[in-house]
Image (cartoon, rainbow, N blue to C red; front, side, top):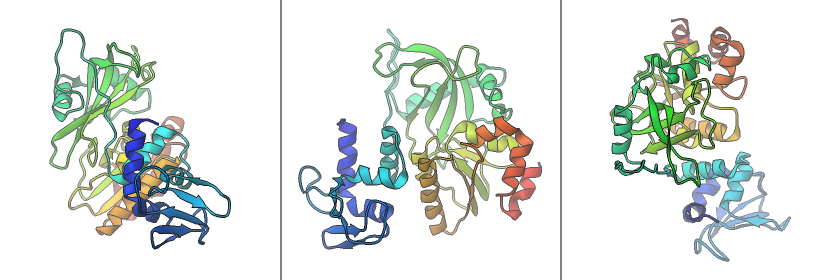
Amino acid sequence: MSLETEDILRDLAQNAESVCRHYLPAGRREGSYWMVGDLQNNPGRSLFVRLTGPTSGQGAAGRWTDGATGEHGDLLDIIRERTGITRFPDLLAEARAHLGRPAPVVPDIPSPGKTKAPGGTPEAAARLFAASLPIAGTLAETYLRARGITCGATSSSLRFHPKCWHRDEGQTKSLPRPALIAAVTDGAGALQGVHRTWLAPDGKDKAPVEIQRRAMGHLLGNAVRLFPSDDILVVGEGIETMLSVREAAPDLPVWAALSSGHLGALLLPPGLQRLYIAFDRDPAGQRAAERLSARANEVGITVRVLEPRLGDFNDDLRADGAEVLRQHLAKQIGPEDRQRLES
């Protein structure tokens, strides 16, 4: 078990009751245990989760047992069962989001003979963004157009770097590759990080490498503010996904949170009246949408969910074009905002 997994399990154990209330809401606390029917969240008392005790070892907080089946496990098992997440990295991302923890940043290795700001800092991110170029006429624009997106060049949050250092896991040598660079900013507009998408030499697809995307800086609560919000906001996970929504509805303000975990933890701007959540059609995306919806509703923001026909809205755009996607969005946008689809 990795040190990161041990750390997350320890944090989950320290917040065991919060985890149970969120993922097993049909249960209730009885003394030092959370009692529920089973892992499917049916009412009952067969499955019990220990809420107190040490954070590791036998009798630890967060350990559960189903008296009817003899099954047992930890809180990650509960999250996996309740969300349907199968990939372990996605499961850790879901757990981080529940805990309000940022995703780990994989530091870059500088090229020989060069020094750089510490990897993962906002300062290093600001230097990279400042060294990048507007995307018009670059491989970044080629990449977006290959995905049916023509509005990318009008976003001040996107830039292009022709030689952005890249390193796959397990490698010690970094190589320069062209990359789409996206600014991650906070509510005051200050740059807190960047997101990099490395591109193929012709720009028509992502680079043929193991790690095609990577973020650096302070991401939790922040977003790529592709087009500024006013009293309404459309937010989702990926940059291409949200640019696809903008392509079909050029008057909608759109942000990209970059992952399901960060979508659920996004800090909403003051004065927001209506929030549209464009989720990806997978369990993690749906859980993130539910989490963000609950937080928005608590502060009186009206929430509507925008659902793609396929996996995400870029899949929809590439399959059917902007006009069909616009018609699909029109069925889900509130009547007070439908005029924005006609701009």
